[in-house]
Image 1 (cartoon, rainbow, N blue to C red):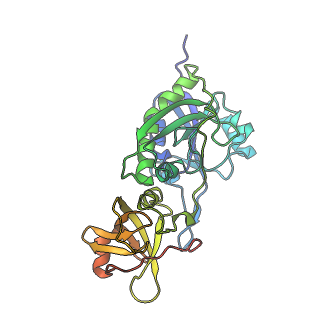
Image 2: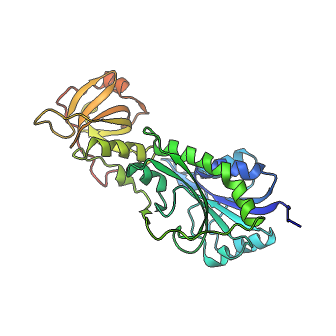
Image 3: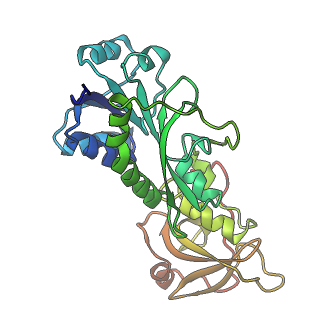
Length: 330
């Protein structure tokens, strides 16, 4: 006789990717959510106030008890999993490595939701890298966790098309919705229908390492297409930055949050970073190849605005040079 009892799970997540998944785990009648864990609150901003992770803040708002877990490999957390009689641990964008003792503890293992079609883009930043490399398709992988970096067997995958104007935040939201749509069935298929993982292919392996803040430093001699992908890949963090003549004094930071590459050749002798035109459509800047139309910006010390609004108070006439943003600048 088949076992139709609800499955006891514990959920570990920190980033926005995990929010729709949490809502689905919480509402699926086939599952018993025994608990939710996230990274500890961290100091942030000028006042260094302790701020919860996006997942923890959402769980708090739902009225859930979200554990702030300094280490999932500590003896007290392992004991808690035993006490809760957890059958499966589900992980999505959590931020800590699970060691063998924890991985072996739940009877049905630890299931990871990874935001790429593995083995492409193993690692911490698969969404950013899919955009930066110009991929047209990505997806989510439901993976059996093991000690290696996203090397475990695959239970299933779901794909979607990357839209030409998707930035990292928008693509993350669509991937999280896609993962939430399938997560309940995947857990049930593993725990109650005996689904087993398939080893990952040995070909097509690539790594998406953690993004560093300096990755957003612009170099205008890159092609406009590459710079457009950077703007999309690094929005909302770390954002692409240039230096521009804003107000009086030295050049100041200008962050680009929306831009499009135009397949047009700048006039001869045009310098990369040179303003070609400005107006209601935005700011048109020459690149190493092609032109970049900048539509939205964040001037230093101000909030995000359209490029047209920025230019009304800070005109940048044709011939103005925008500088590269120095790597290592804050």
